[in-house]
Length: 291
Image (cartoon, rainbow, N blue to C red):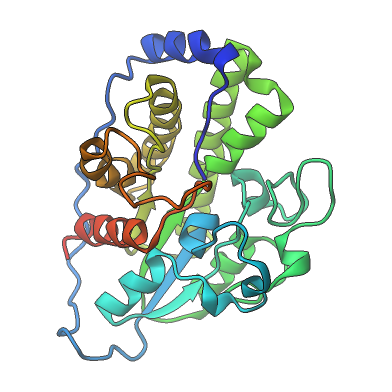
C-alpha cells in the first residue's frame, strides 16, 4: 500500500526531502548472480520462488466480498513472475503487513494480524495463499532452511508503516516522518539480514519499491520517494536487487496526466494495482534479475 501525506504535513515532507537530498530515487546497480533459467514453456521441478510482503504481492483489492474466501481469486505479480519463469510459487504475503508485524506476529499491523484499534486482522477472517502460524519472517526462515533449490525471493514492505504513521498522527511532526522512515529501513535491514543469516539464503532477493497514485502530486510523490529511499538503502546493505515499481508506473501514469488510476494501473477508489499494474510490477522484477 502507498504512503499518502495529509495537507498539514506537506511542508514537513518537503523539508525532509531537502534535508535528505531526495530529488529522485535511483535503482542501485547490484548484479544478480547468474542463474540458469528453464526454457520458455517448460517446467522447472524443484525450483521454488518465495514471495513475501503486503497486499500488493498478495493481489488484494478492496470490496471483493465473498472472493476473500478463496485466495486463488487474488493474483499479484508473484503469480505472474512464477508463471513466466516456470517456478513453484510460495506466496506468503499478507494484506496489511507492516515491517514490524512481519517480524513479530503480535506487533502492530495495518490489517494483517490486527488493525489500528482492533485485534482482528485479515488472517483471522480469510485464508492466505500459504497457511502458516507465527510471523511471516518465521515462515520465510523455515522455508529457506527446509526447501532446496529456492531460486528467487521477493519482498515488498513498508507502505503500511506509512499509513499507520498517518492514522496515529506520528507524521504530524518532522521528527515523526524521519522516525518512520528510519524504522522501515531498520526493520527491512533486520529482515533481509535474517533471510541471509538464519535462512542461510545466498541467492537472489528482489526488493520492490512502491508506485505513486498521482505522479503529478508533489506531496504524494515526495512521500513515496522517502519510503522508497529507505527500502533501497536496506536492499543495498544486504546484497538485494531493487525492482523499480515507482519507475514502472511513471510513464503510463504521466501520459494520463499523472494518475495511475486514469492510466488503468490502479483500481478506482482503491490503492491496489489492476491486472495491468501487476503485470508492470512483474516485468520490473524480471528486469531486476536480468530476465
